[in-house]
Image (tube, rainbow, N blue to C red; front, top):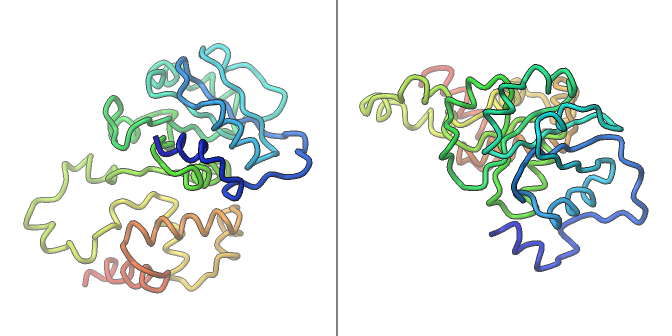
Length: 242
């Protein structure tokens, strides 16, 4: 597994390790009844984000209790999603600031579909467990700042059943990759098209500049372009119908 092998390599350069760890003021809550997130990964999270503390629980009732610090991120194992969704009101009342993500142990969804995420009253993001450690931590950082990470085909395509073969052929050049962008990524791409720089985009959406850079990296990767100028040009062409 990529994450575990990266940790086993013990490469200290991949994670910042502060000389003195400050007291945590935010909680990352993991709801799982299986060892989905290993202890080395939890240690990596708390070293990378020393202002956080990871709590693990295996029951919904335990997840609904109030912790010593606010919960900023809630990670739910795929096997407990349905049970958690049934308790969505309780979980949101207990942790109103928390973004909720499903822990996905495989590269593609099996038990939970794209439509399940779209219709979920609770889940807003996905944490894949097959990423390199540095990328995985970047996804954690993105979600801690409220950003969504949805590494699969667009919900719109899933709802509509996908475009016909002829329509795909006609629109392939301009729509390639755009259907995979999340709502936040589309919003940021709009700002890029309007000429806003990262600092102003960060202010607009109450994000850090680092988070905006991660969003832009994901946008360029999904669109298959090399820079923000090409990404903006692709989006303008799509909107203009060319």
